[in-house]
Image (cartoon, rainbow, N blue to C red; front, side):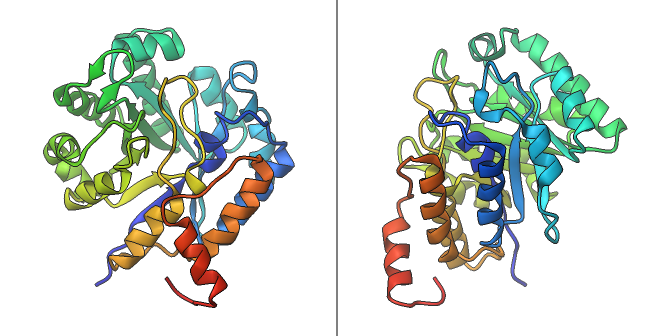
Length: 305
């Protein structure tokens, strides 16, 4: 029986939030439609943050009101606090995600709260989401290394993950925010959490800063994880985290998963046109490690890759 792996496209949020060019709501909507045309069925649409802090995310409520209602598409949004939660709920968002950084300094630099304060806020928001019938998702950021504190203790990441599940999180995403993870470090974090992986409640978010994102995906697959974040063309990174350049490119992830025999529902060759069109929208050079090879396959008339 073919196993399915969910590819959660985060380009419209994580990809755009660090770009110099701010796309209009209409352009963001076009971007999402381009992604859906490739077979992607899980999309992080945007975040409900202050437009003063992240102007690229202004108008996310308008965007949700216009989203295409394609079959079996799961849309989600990031929320930073209670106000963001209320805005998301009012906009009709069905899946919300919070971010809990695993180090004291990252929380202070990112949202000016302590680790304990952030944990308390995220716990409350997970509980509220469950009570309101929304899907509750929690990111544990800088799960492997922090740009300010260095290597993050695996035990702390495991403990915070458990706390988010205890608070009612449907899913916890282990996030390599600056792309510093390696396969052994991934296994050290994920192995004690394997029961959650096997239940489909654990996901991973890798950056390709040091070129190891796919190796880390492989280690995660071996630990039972069957959902991953990625960004079309490798677009984006965290604007609040020094060195957090380069998300895992969707075309790299999909090509590897398809080649390994997993079912993604995504046409890896169709991603070539998606990269080109989104490159034109963002005016940013895009393309993962496999992009040129995929482009050649399209030029040669190959139907499947």
